[in-house]
Every structure is written in structure tokens, then in C-alpha cells.
Length: 451
Image 1 (tube, helix red, strand yellow):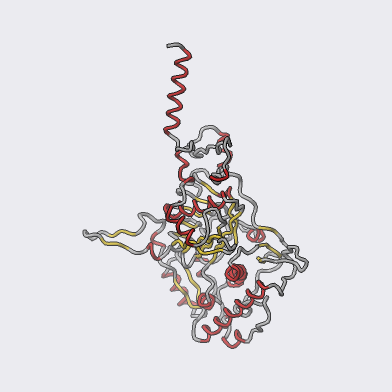
Image 2 (cartoon, rainbow, N blue to C red; image 1 turned 180 degrees about the vertical axis):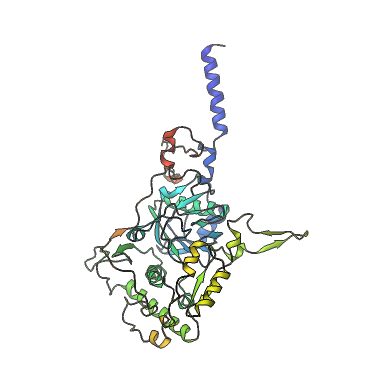
């Protein structure tokens, strides 16, 4: 056998070995999770909702309810609720994230981009929600790599099961493939129902939550993605000057049908809160040991042998999942302290539980609440809390956050638009096993140990 024939034989053997480690489309099998297709069941659900896998999406997360919603844009241009996922784990307390290491899940309006996707996550799959955003940076808040990921383990993230994150990741990936540039992620403390608003009306975070509610109401009224900006360290939504140009710090157009509808919804909610307060619903604060999970994961099953098994095999800090303790505001301090100690909160929660409770007078009377002028759309929930809104400083006008560092995550093009002879999508590598330093360039933010 000639030397050239030996060379050709060796090359053929090497090619077969390489193909054995690849998927049918030629991509490395270790990244196969990224290309998991949208399931036929999910495709049928999209069709039923009047949408498709390439249409834009919007995500919402609720801490107290431990749920994550996926909304899809329908053919009418409005968003419809596609699916609600029970959250397997989140950590911290109700309220925004402020410092690195506080194990706190952030709250606010965030932006997910294609570069946020991390197929090489140590937590099965993940994507970055975009914390800190312009609002967080205006307050000097620190922290990074806040993810939605699998593994049911959280140290400040939104944790799902591996099966859930695979489905959510696939739907997100296809929205980018369809042309969506940025996905809005609304992270909320709870559903802004009149009942929740009445219960937490004396919570120190209420001025912040009132801002978030304006954006939530805008989406609920229009079923269209609200445009978010920051002015004087405050969230503003769909702010457009009279002349039609976008001006985050300009006056709101009070004649806009959307502004009028949002104000009407706010007044209806205010009236219901006043009614609930008058009926005896007292203000409370909720303190967790360290976050919570959806109640569906807490159910247990008994086998014939008497063994007990939960819905998930493993969850981080199961001892801290007690659902939280509601502490009435205005009760004697020693009683409140005992209730907080009984819940044994984590260090980050202890700071919340031990802070002085607002005086009983902080909770407004039903009569005073009901007398609020109904014609003031900018005075939403005024007199709910004896505190003040976040202090004003230098104006900060910004669009949602800076883009994460590129991760070179390929998104497959739509099949009908793929042209013959087009270049094959760039092959991806496992950042944890790569040897060539240049291959690590796009994944330096997602090394082992990170989410």
C-alpha cells in the first residue's frame, strides 16, 4: 500500500470518528440540548392559540406564586398566554436584588437577547435575564449572571426542572430565529391582584412595586409589550411626547387611550383595595427562610413499601422551603420577632424580618383611601404607605440594559428561508472541555460553576 493510500485511509478513519461524535446536522453532540426541537405537543398548543414557533414571546415570573409564564404574539399582534410553568425553586425574599451575594431574585423589567443563551450551562440549559438593568445601575446595585436554568437549585436565580428549561429554551431560541431581537422579562414579587395589594400595602417595597404595576397594567390592558425606559431613577412606560417623539422624561400624554385605560384600571384596583381594607384585611409582611417553590413540587407519593418520594429527586436547601410566614404589621415587636425567629430565615432574610415594622398609622383607613381623587392618573395608590417614593437625583434616561457579552450561540435559520450552498452554522464547543484558548473566547462568561 502506497503512502498516499495510507494517508487517505487514515483520513477516512478520522472522519468516521468525528461523525460518531456529531449529530445528523454536523453539530457536536455535546451541544445537542441547544438544538432540541420544539415538541409536537407544544406546536399543537401554539396552533390552538393562534401563534407559531417563530413569533415573538414575552416572559413573566412571579415569586410568591412560584410561576413562570410564556406569552406568545398572535396573528393579531396581541400577546396570548401560551403556558404557565410551576417554578421549581427561587431564593431570597419579596423585593428587589441589591447587592452581589444576597441570594435575592431581582424584580423589574429586563431584556433577554440571543447572546443571553447558554447551551453549556452547568445547570442543564440557561439564559441570562439581563440583571442589572438601567434602573438597577442607577441605584448602584451589584450582581450578575442571574439566570433562568434547570437543576432545581437556586442561589439567586429562577430554577426550573431540566424538562421545563429544555422546552422554554427551545421556544425562546425559535423566537430569536424568527427575527425577535430582544425578549422582555417581567420579574414580579406577586400577581398584582387587589387582594395582594391590600395585604402588602404597608410593605416598605410598595413604592417600588407601584412603579412595576404601571408597566404590568399597561401590558394587561393592551396585551402588547410595554416600552420601558428610565427617567430620574424611575421606570416609565410607553412615554411619548405630544409631537410623537419618544421622550422618557417628557410629560405623559394623558389623552392617549392606553394611558386612560391604565388609569381606569388603577382606580378600580384602588377602590377594591379600600373595600378589602374596610372589611378587615390587615397589612402584613411575608418573610421566607430562603425563597420557595411551587406547591405542586411539595406533594409526596407513598409506595407500597411506605417509601416517600417527591416530584423532583433533588432540590437545593429543601429545609428552607416552608412557604414563608406572614407577620401582621403593627403588632407588638416581641410577637413579630418570635414569629420571624420561628421561621428561621436565612441571613439575607433576617435583615428584612428584624427591621422595625411601620407604625399602625402607616396603614391608611378605608375612608381616607376611598377619598383619593379619581381624576389623578399619576397618583396611583397614593396614601397606601406613609413612606416616600425613591429619592430623585440626576436624570438617568436609558433604554433597557447593555447587551451581554457575545457567546457565539448559533440559532438555526428558518428552514423555508435557507438557501442552497449557504455556509453551515458555526460549530459549537463545550467550554468546559475545550483545549484551544481561542475557542473559549465566546464562552468566558459561562465557565463551570457559573449558571
